Figure (spheres, rainbow, N blue to C red):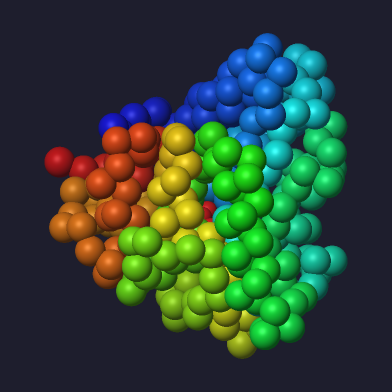
Length: 247
Ligand code: F6R
């Protein structure tokens, strides 16, 4: 299903409430909530609202375990552009999550060690019973995570090469495209699909053409997000601008 909100702010608050409801219902049952998280500008408002719910309404993250979708490769965790830094600054440093419960692909590995790391990432997710709720943004290539065009629907966590358009879009963060890593470690389409609930968010007219393809286009590896049409537990949450080309 597609849900359109008047603007990004109310949509972000609604998504944060969904996450908070999940965390609280798990707390009531003495269970852990396993969240799949995204970086980028899209989820920033959701994380800000989660921080507010923690500070002002006592939402605790003690029972929360997180797995981030991706990280650039190579990437030092302390670098300003790392997804570790992003998550700390936008969420983890402001809530009471146990940092031992946070998982982000490791951008410092030797290339030979990446396959074993990726298998272990999948194993950790499975050992916890899978991801309860996966948050996604969408890139203008149609990527989810860093699953660029050509990604297989059953792909797992792996090292991938970033699309040229993705590196262009990241160039501002890195002070020039030449500084953008050419690779990343990402959960696969198959990994994402195993989540019990998936929410893909998109804001602004810049995302309208790719949202039209993702929601209404032919299912194809050329636009990896189209695979989400095959799932009955995916919700597209859009602002009016991102939804403006939908029929
Ligand atoms: C980030 C991720 C990417 C982004 C996508 C959109 O962890 O997996 O798929 O969600 O590139 O990025 P923004 O939100 O910056 O437009």
